Length: 193
Image (tube, rainbow, N blue to C red; front, side, top):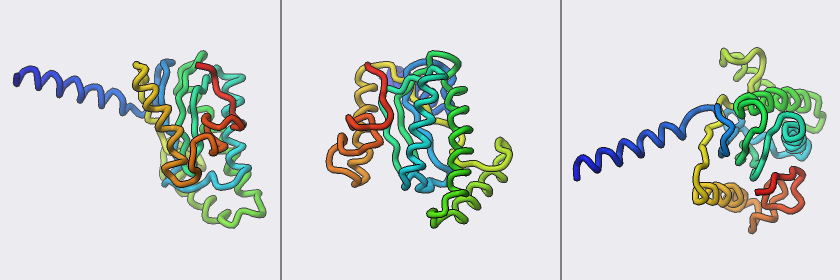
């Protein structure tokens, strides 16, 4: 019994360590989370949300990104994705880099942004202290991928994605939240299963 317990513990522990990798190196079906530095609530304005969905559309059309499910919250995005082209980590890196530049420029030039000085200062500070960046940092490093290898795991992640805005108190039902694959009116169209 002790030997069996050890093997179960070792299997669970290695599975947890495998899932906690920082970036998605394969093209397998993957659940990822991309988060704004310091969990800043950035996606409170429509134009910032559209930058994200438009950049994801670009990645779908030009970089082989397949988005099956997603939800864009105020400070993070969850997605079930796969890449048909280059490694998923490369596509996500390009998405984060380009969208960060667009977001920063839009914030800096937005006369209606009451948090402009605070946001630009915060993103510049994060860029200075991170040796992987040159000037600014909007997204946290890493995507926290979880490879999805069973129907049960996939369904659990779909439920998690769709329930995120409900649990946050934004809507009563998942389909009511526009920036989610649960909404029929979502600006981002997802791949068919």
